[in-house]
Length: 160
Image: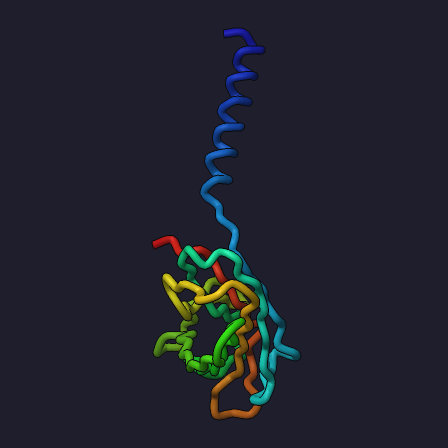
């Protein structure tokens, strides 16, 4: 084989690999993080995530994402959630996020900041097109919750 043919063959294989790899990656409909000021989540501080849904024919998976540090003093995190629909009433829920095991080992990925995703809804069909707002407020018994670095919210097409 000539060097020119080898180069073309290598380039062709590289292009095919790139196309195959990029087709496997699907971006989220919405993904946003908000920093907790001074890593200290006040009890009355609520964080809002607003996004639009145009395709209601497919199911979605919704996740609360938490980034915490070693300063977080508890094993779990209780969060109060509200969902505001384009049409209809506000829906409320309480979510328990288990961040560590009984021995204090963090479940999340990371070294000094640990990240975990918590499913809120799976295979969820949004009832209407339009703007949705999810809000989250910490539901722990302390007024100031140390060690939560950021919270996030992600909406992606369901893989089920």
